[in-house]
Amino acid sequence: MTKVRIPTPLRQYVSGNSEVEVSGGTAGAALDNLTDQHPDLRQHLYTGDGKLRSFVNVYKGDEDIRYLDGPDTEVSDGDELSIIPSIAGGAAGGRCREL
Amino acid sequence: MPLKIGAGDAGHIHDHAKEAYPEECSGVMVGMDVEEMKIVVDVWRAENTHEDERSRRFLIDPKEYIAFDKRAGERDMDILGVYHSHPDHPAEPSDYDREHAWPGWSYVIASVSEDGIEDMRSWVLKDDRSGYDEEPILG
Image 1 (tube, rainbow over the protein chains, first blue to last red):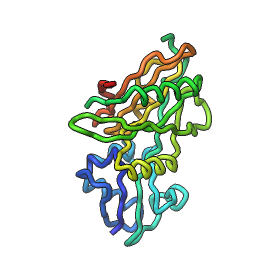
Image 2: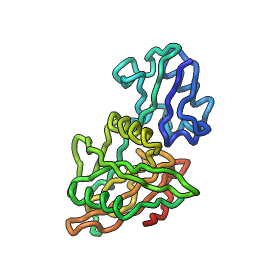
Image 3: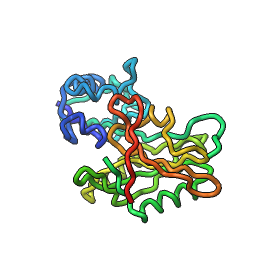
């Protein structure tokens, strides 16, 4: 089993837990199993076409899986995955509006 | 759920927004949920690491988030939300904000112009990500 650390905004979808244990031989499989168990998580992690949202980072230990093998990154018993938010935003584009 | 921000912490957000102007500033608010109210105990500035267009975009590096989360946990607090400024724009979330928002967090937006702070409002993403609900800010 792989431990997945859940960031505070998403804990409401996993019964308030900060960690969830899931099976799966790769990071992608582990996340699939996580969202199968907790379906309300899916829309916050994935876009409508099933891609991990750009501001959702998944780390294996201290490394972003984007710099490993992405969803195919192998995980084994005792490994820890962490869902880490990139926090982003900003005003509407185009010309500034008069306040 | 109302968000309680004391005058000192609100002042820190205002100061950050004015110092960063005309670029956007951002940071996190930490504290706790108590009796149906989110109480901000401290606000921590973050570096805007967006590569360009910092007058209308902000980005907090995941590594900085990890450090904030650890620091909050050591103080038995949670990250309650994020503040950022909208230079020369209203204190209302944009579509870009919504696309990048996390559920449950308070998003405080300070509207700032060259004359100073124009407005400050707080928003929470709807569960279905379709928009925001405004939440009252209590002093």
